Image (cartoon, rainbow, N blue to C red; front, side, top):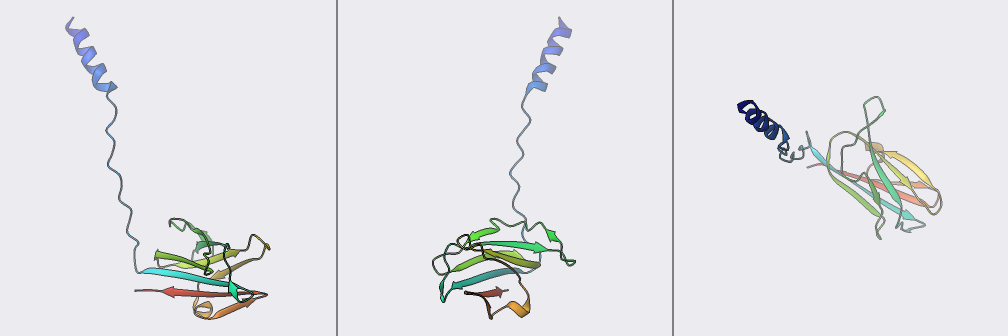
Length: 131
């Protein structure tokens, strides 16, 4: 009888659900936090509805995990897309117009920042802000 009682207690102890661990807090980005803004115009008018995706590259140029929320964004009525709270790194903006099929990838590098890049009827401006 004693053996049966010990067996039942052990079985009940093992049948208890495992405790749920507390939720992990999001990791803070390491290094400086940056903001990338893209402004696009089509035939000198804001280009609304373009699909822009933000990607990250290794120093060797290979794609690496961006580890950001919503890397894909749609340009607003002003033709603007903004990503903020990004860690430092090598970033690439991929732009696609679903209406025309136009696609372009631009590295976020000094030679492309704060100037207008013209490709056919499209005008693209990249801005990078650091605190």
